[in-house]
Structure formats: C-alpha cells, structure tokens
Amino acid sequence: MADQTLTAPGPVHAPRELAPPEDRGSLEVRLKAIRHVVERVALQTPGVVRHSTVLGRVSGGGSPHADVTMRGRSARIALRVAVVWPAPVTAVAAEVRDAVRSEAARLTGVHVETVDVEVYAVSDDDIDEPTRRRVE
Image (tube, rainbow, N blue to C red; front, side, top):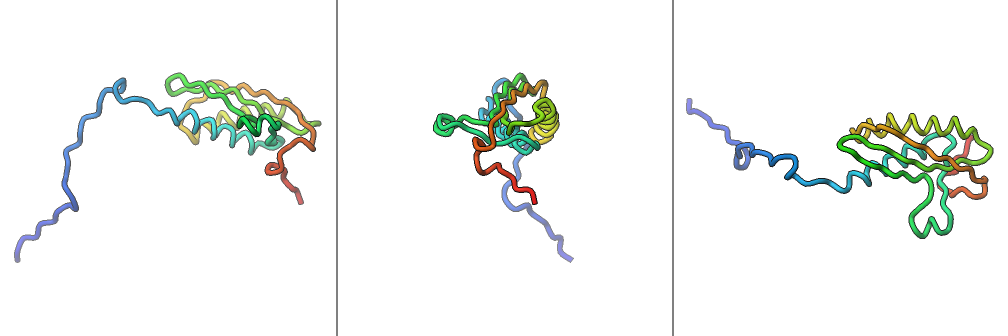
C-alpha cells in the first residue's frame, strides 16, 4: 500500500510575533460603538423615550445621548434620557443606570466604572413616533 500524504490547502506560515502594545495603535470606532450600545440599552429601559428638538434632529443630538470617556479598559458614562411626564424619574434613572452598567459591560467587554444619568421630562406630544409603544 502506498503512503498517502495530506497537504494543507495553501501555504503554512509560522506565527508571527506581535508588536509591543504601545506600537499597535488604537481603534477610534470603539467609543462610537460603546456609545451606540449604551444608547440602545437606555432606550430599551421601560419609561425611556426617544426625543429630539428640531435643532437636535438637524445636528444629530437628542435623547438618549451618551458621552463615553475611556481610561484603559474602563468607561465612565454620562447619559441623558427623556421620560414622558408624569413618570417615576428616580426609579427610571436607577433602572437605566443598572441596565447600562450590566448590559454595556456584557456586550462590549468594557468595565463600566460610573453611569451618571440625567433625566428630563417631556410631554406625550413631544416624543418621536418610532419609540411609542402600543400596549394591547
């Protein structure tokens, strides 16, 4: 019986050595990705609604809006959310803080040091249509 030799498809390369961490560069998209995750988690919290003024729609501002500051693998988050008045503002702020702290850490792998939540109330007529939820 003849010997059979199996060959790998394509060339086999020896593992190359990685450059030192300080020479590898950084990824700017990370902050935007974390901000997007934080805003999405906040919007999924019961009581939080999407809201923007006319100027906010033009400039890309509005609510929810997160500012993320990174220090190493840790993040500090300042978050602005809107609720429809009357609302239990303190309870909503606590739920948003807890949800953001756990879900943002789980989804991004970043340790969330602090989450400061600013809540402002709007009337039912002021919220943006896509976030209105119909309960049947």
